[in-house]
Image (cartoon, rainbow, N blue to C red; front, top):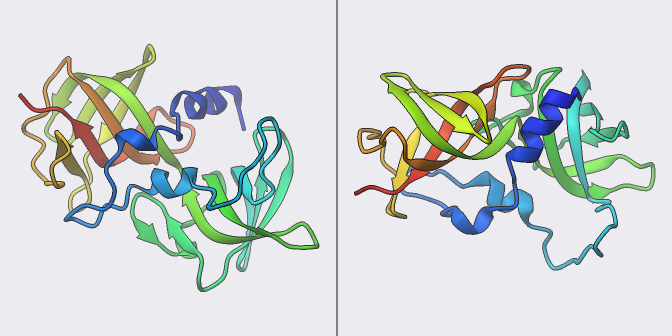
Length: 201
């Protein structure tokens, strides 16, 4: 994982689930909420969670994903028919591609393989300010970097003031703060928008 990607993911904090709504009327499941969850198990501070893996997909062999972590640790992640997969929306293993960023949670097997309960591909959760709005994109300032958020027909939704999600983005305003959950386009500063959270006057 290159330094730019690591910085991008570091800034796209995934632990801010408290500010994100859960399931909405449109079925947006706020996947970052599930990503942050560890169930009843507590991982001591400073220790690595053995049931979690992150990195970039380097190879795909059947239902096995080979992933190189940002710390250069190699992970073997096995997906089953019961594994939930998210890439902008709930999907299947077929959507995974070499180069995708990945977060996975599951159970570590004796051979070191992670049997995944859930996999998130290219997920980002950005806090940003709207710099410009076009008919098909939001131009965002995220921690001093410009990010282009693409509106995806039939998928992108907005949540205003915590109300149920709607497809109407007309209440978004230049200069206002937003939180955006979406799927990063690998090796770019571009994101496909799943849900944008904003306040409306």
